[in-house]
Length: 631
Image (cartoon, rainbow, N blue to C red; front, side, top):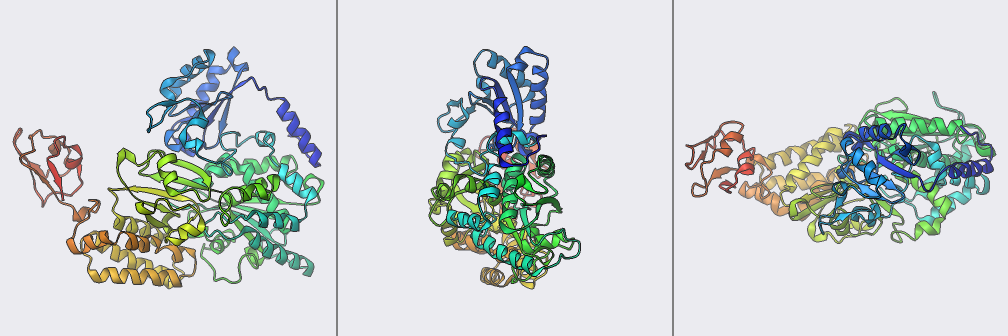
């Protein structure tokens, strides 16, 4: 490992690495992020390397295991460089065909992505609509670097922002650059990053000048910087994928934060369910320390910085700053009243800055390319890009990154490829379990903090769930509220009891036992919990309830007045019967019924016993003659 003592050493190392790269050599990049790994990407990498080992082709072809490429629904993904040939859903048995096609300058047609709109195969990665309509900044190096090799990151100007900043910029200049960029925290609230940094920097300076002491068990520092990797939203995996695929990019941001604020210790708080992210971050820290980018006197600047990885146990509430701090300190993860804010008194009572994974990833990009570059993307009040995990009833699921201000419609219909099976879009939920449900008629709403907030939703950390016509919005509200109710730490009464009472009402409504008064009470509870809860979990938990009541009240009323679920999703409100004139007596429904509730002679109309029926819908799904009626 090259030991760096000055910025010139980093430049020389980068030049040396680049000189070893043969532009004529073919490189096969395989996505080995969690999604693709679970689909067998590791076997593809192993098979490729075995096929090339000892073969003359091995001198001309290299294999690189990279982080998440984003198109998770199509994994495992393989990209051939420099031709950019893009293969999806690759299995180990396809490896010989891929290598043969490379020898013959051809492609394996069956492995190409087929555009669902044109039904035509797409050869090159940048021509796939899922990628061509993105602007990847935070995700920019995912898919290009081996996350376990620091040299890959160095070759792409990695740590150049550290070299530039530590030797040519003062902390005040850094904060001013971040301020002019307009960067807002990507953890959910969208608070201006520079404002928070400035407060903490002033408090750390004051503590240093007054000779403040360390708290019990605390490393030797006057303040802390923390990367919040406790991503707990159902269906969200943006932060995980960045930590897995580009750990050095996040680490570089944390180093820059420590220098700017005058903090000598940084933490990565990563939930324990992300073993690959933890593994790759620990590896990145080891490599950066070995080459002198962490530790004492970084690049001869006089700045010392160490980084510690703390693992969370999966409590959703620990995504909140003060609960996260309590967890690192070894206490139960519960929020604390504010003020004082962490920038004043945080980890072990010292000024502390906590930013999201994506926020830290933007920092080196802004300092290297300039605030004007960042300002030129997005909207005046929400500059830059937004990263979303696009999931649900949509053709293309995965990670997307687009400029702020991009309409929701563009995300769903173009990047997402439209709703599954050609069904109608009903709603899009943004902001995770604490976000709002946006109806189809508001699909042209721009994705930015102000626009989403104006319609009752929120940006959140980037979860986005697409729902189709078969989705019951009352049940959706119940589902998300059940999650936040379970994850409530119980410290404050509004959240502890308010969410439970709301969940009880929603459960009554979805089981056909709700009343008109329940709708009034539900709304009153939602407003009160939102206004009086201690932390962001309770303050935002009612959002799915309030937005579904606002935009889909007719569905609530149907559940209460008519005892019907118009989406046929609530079992207790659905009945099944067989239309005798359409039934052919084929017996297919009988064979699939789990409780033997269907009777009838073969080739004669069948009947469903309503007392025995468990309303699973199997008969409705398998009937080829549309004889099963669902009411």
